Length: 225
Image (tube, rainbow, N blue to C red; front, side, top):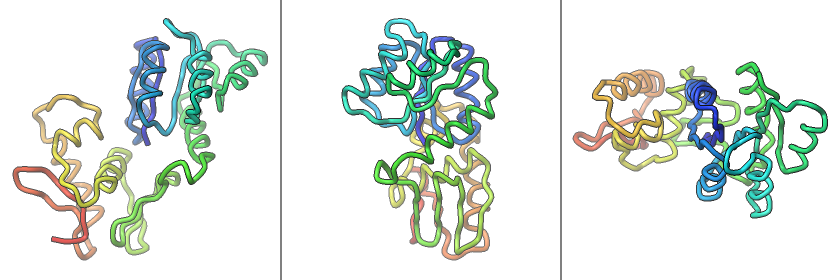
């Protein structure tokens, strides 16, 4: 699941973004309202989290503009303004939920999950399947041959990326950018370690193996050697 976070407080943005990534979400950042509006208009996101008080363009104006343009992506508003009137204005501007600062990160996650569950199934794929391997994006559950597979948040995100690109060769650069949001190679065995653990979970005890190494190119997930 891909989330856009529009937040001008750098420390708060870093804290929330890191927490979201550790929870298995992909997260992009925008530091002001104009950048947030541009990204939200040009990109495809499953959810937008927007601070209300933003430089360049305030959060409610961002949301109202998105709705005027027919963009229905769910928006969770974050704000230190917490009166009933403030919340009503936020929801009437087109927000789908309103969370007052300061907040517990566990509550933020719960509200994100609730908003994603409420999305119409026609708005996007919520289940991925390759052979007998199934991944449920909303329930965050993985099964193979009717057996549940336990994955960490990062392993789930890695498997989702592979399944969305099933049959294609996925390079290390694609994985670093798509799963870890890194635009450089940290020169570590980061990918190898996570891929090895994922293979143990997804392929060990099952036949045929689905995750394959393409020597010199990357990896692929497919139901064939």
